[in-house]
Length: 205
Image 1: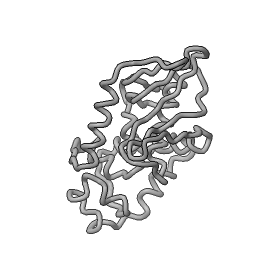
Image 2: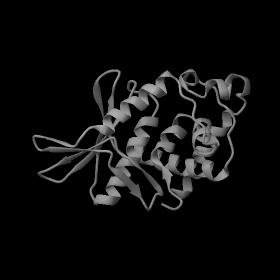
Image 3: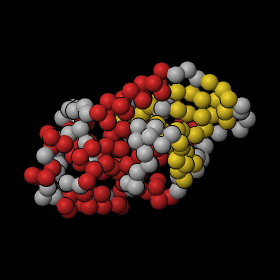
Image 4: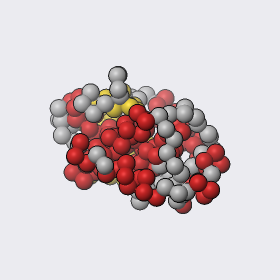
C-alpha cells in the first residue's frame, strides 16, 4: 500500500522514536533475550490454526489496513462472534502490562483498521501478556484514539524525515536491544524532542 506504514512502527515510536528510526529507517535489528522470546511467541501464535469455541471463531495472522490513515499490519488473533458478527483483535505480548501506552496504541491502530474494513464500532479489545498469563482488557475510548492518531502522524513525520532522532534516556532503555548501539546515557540531550514531535501537528488530526 502506497504511503502506508506498519502498525508495529507505531508501537516502536510510542516506546522510543529512536528505536523506531533504527528499525524502520536504518533497517537495523539487534536481538536480545527479550526480543528473541517475543519472536518465538509470535511465531507460535501465527502458526496455530483457526478454531471455534462456543460462539467465538478465532482467526490468526489476519492482515488489516486503513486506506484513510495509511497504516497496515497483521493481527495476532481476531475473535469473531458468529452470532452478531462482531469482531475484536487480541494482541500477544511477551512481558507484562505496561504503564506506558505503547502496546495499547498498537492495539488501537488495529481497531481503527478493523472499523474501516468492517464498518463496525469496536469499543473493547485485549492484550494477552505471556508473563502473567492473562488478558488486559482495553477500552478503546476517545483518549486512546486521539493518542493513536497523534502517534500515527508523528511516526509518518519521523519516517519521512529519514533521520535518526537524538537519544532520550529512560529506565526502559536497559530492556531495548539497541542499548549498546544507541548509548543513550552518552547522548541524552534532547528532552524537548518528544514533546515537539507529538504536539506540533495537533491541528492535523
